[in-house]
Length: 454
Ligand code: S3P
Image (cartoon, rainbow, N blue to C red):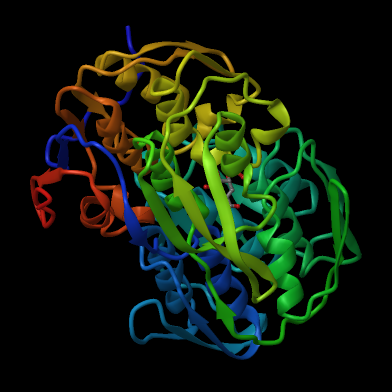
């Protein structure tokens, strides 16, 4: 029997008609990881932080509202503009109510580290998906620093952070490749006594380390180790958030699967080297992606990506690229389903504890669309071929919903994608933008705005 969650009945449905290719030029919304961190760090800094390119998705907006509830003055201006009046970490006060963080593991895990370090009594809650996600991975190291954090059964949310004595820095070896765990421990370490050091088993995104440096914090990094001394204060800075490479991934895959001769430009994409695994993997599959106009924005590399169509070829995905492309696997499974030959993904067991079990959801969904795919404990084996279409259940996961929509480029029949509301957590306006680039998605259900292209 499938262990997939029940489909929500009142959530939007995407119906994607078979599409030929993507072309033109587009810009995706701001990076989700950086948007969360901009609010958290700006809120505890001294002075005014102005953010442009902020992702106005549900996840990062929940983080913004959580800091407002703790007394921080944060104003939203034009699209993507946020102004945070930081008065230092000491002025944060308990919200007096539970802080609801929606679908966001990043929001919950990073805020738990930060607020446990500050000893601010807080209850953190989330939606059904977040409420089922493992929190022991952060609670255990934080408790060993002296934090007091209550959880539900089996270490699940809601989390209840209680005040207590000042935390002590630790040296922590992370058992899994997780930027959220690394960041939670480092953020607790910001207000702990002594030095906090985290060793990780593989490279994970380093936005916390880079952005803290931008706020004037001395963070030492050496290979797979990051450390900082507690008691440092943050000075406000202005931040420009680049386009999210994770949101770009659907278009990179779609562009590669488009016919030879077609071309697509994705502008102003963040190319932090801890995030570019998707480009490396697509290039290994024969994808033609050129990086142009490379520049630095707020300490992060940014560039325009030129994608030429022509198809992909199956590969064994090198395991060292997995943590550098962890959020892009739903899109990469579609790349593999449309590639010539066989693709093997291994070493990706972390996919099982994302917003959904992304191995299970992608395997079931692609099978329902006619793909030849078998899941394994840590990945999947996929034989590329055209799909026949049908109905795929995203199970409320934003990235699987967008991945199944992109599969319309390799499908002979329409694809109905169920339970798509959470696309708004990371990519508001996805269907409209995809339609302008060559997809043909109709959004059905409440609040539907996108209609068929043309
Ligand atoms: C994130 C880290 C990753 C990623 C998530 C965002 C972050 O999670 O999947 O979407 O912003 O630090 P893990 O740390 O669980 O791998």
